[in-house]
Amino acid sequence: DTGVSQNPRHKITKRGQNVTFRCDPISEHNRLYWYRQTLGQGPEFLTYFQNEAQLEKSRLLSDRFSAERPKGSFSTLEIQRTEQGDSAMYLCASSYVTTGSGELFFGEGSRLTVL
Amino acid sequence: DQQVKQNSPSLSVQEGRISILNCDYTNSMFDYFLWYKKYPAEGPTFLISISSIKDKNEDGRFTVFLNKSAKHLSLHIVPSQPGDSAVYFCASRGGGADGLTFGKGTHLIIQP
Image 1 (cartoon, rainbow over the protein chains, first blue to last red):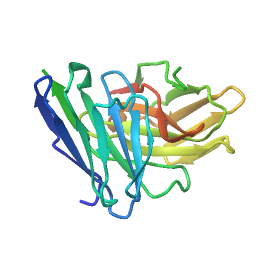
Image 2: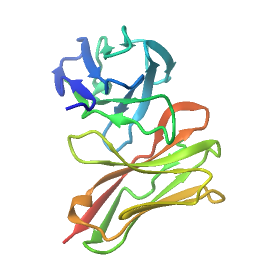
Image 3: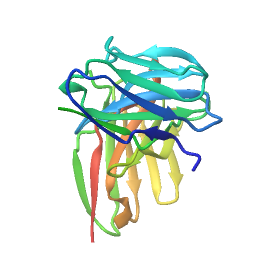
């Protein structure tokens, strides 16, 4: 399977704990995006990387959130001191530059439940 | 300040009939519009797109229409099939932001 891969698929944690999600993009894609989706909402942009450079961060990305893409391949999204409001589906997507329509290829998501 | 709006949370259509999903936007700087389809427990998958310089794009059973003056686009699915039952997201590119801006989605239910 050469699609976008995310793990874990589901994470249940207690409030105040740290969690980390991993995303492996499609190998030839140089852009990687993180989105968050809550119930009844569409995906909301969090941040994106071009190769290893983090080029944009949404104001939704509080200082408890940090994302890295150290070698321009896989990426991690860490949430520190989780809060119940962090419960959501975290989606990763990748693309190759922004040619054409800018289509993004999404992974299946990592669902976070904060108790 | 939602820039992409899908005002119908759900839509029910009989199998074989036409499904029409609507989307409105506010930012005239968007240069591409895309539709994504999402099944439960899966990520969104790309369906069809349209450039802002066109008014129609067709791909098999799916056609997207763009009315720039009204800042409105629609996705037509004909004929509708049971496998089309899913949540459909309208998304736009550009407007000063990288990545895509999504609407809240419309849950399409195809009735047998």
